[in-house]
Image (cartoon, rainbow, N blue to C red; front, side, top):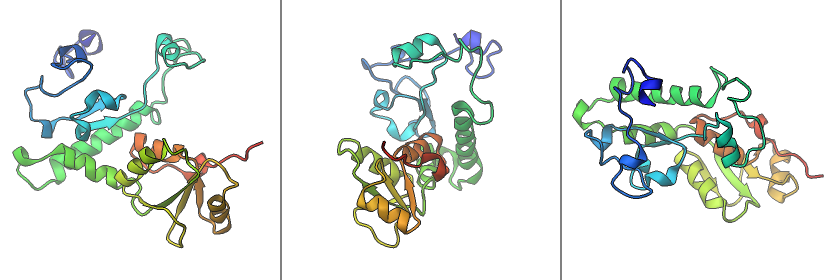
Length: 220
């Protein structure tokens, strides 16, 4: 596969390390690499596969190109291969992630003041992630208890402040129902009222998303 994707050896140098090369069953690790952990970026769609290296991970949406992938994950639609198409070149998931990689590369090599051997890409990721929702103050309204901790964790990692009660500093109410007290307050006070997918999208794309694309529809 490496030779098929990169026949000239420009990117992979004829070697792709897979999960089968790892030293732990059902886990991926950096112990099979010669480089230092602080200089390695991981791009994957499965966070739980990297339990020991989450600080190195850029989590992205799963890329469903083949029909078998769509079927495996329950998508009842034609795959990109069946449509003989692909993602949007400027706006697709892979293109957006490439922009993130370029930002990380520029920060690591051109902006950090430490000696190269002392630089840590994990700190670069942490800093860039914390800028995504910087300045946003969130209140959650009637979110399923099992989903709330993960959403709050994402938001805080991206620099947002999460409150439990409404006050004038709140910029966004995150909800799934326009009829809750907090949702009605957001509308009245002209605050942003967004679906939880707004947070998830910002987390995947490493960029604050337009709130109008994640408004809550009234239940019929």
